[in-house]
Amino acid sequence: MLNMHPKYITDEQGNKVSVLLSIKEFNAILEDLEELDDIRMYDEVKTLQEPSVPIDEAFKQIETSRKKK
Image (cartoon, rainbow, N blue to C red):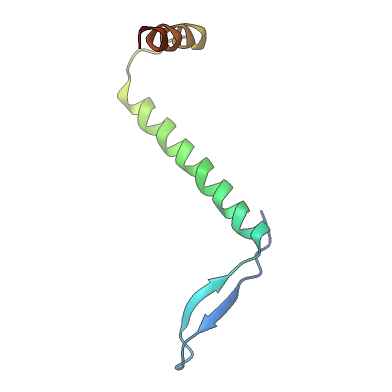
């Protein structure tokens, strides 16, 4: 886990309105969000209980579809 060091921008009343992060921290958050999205999609697909296709067969189907276009 990346150790975050956020800096806050406040309004005149002292309310936090924005956050500043280093590029490293921001990119780490984006990577984590992308991984979480992948996990969510995987979990969603697993609940569909549709038959799976071996990856080699899937690639063949994709290539065949591309060649037809």
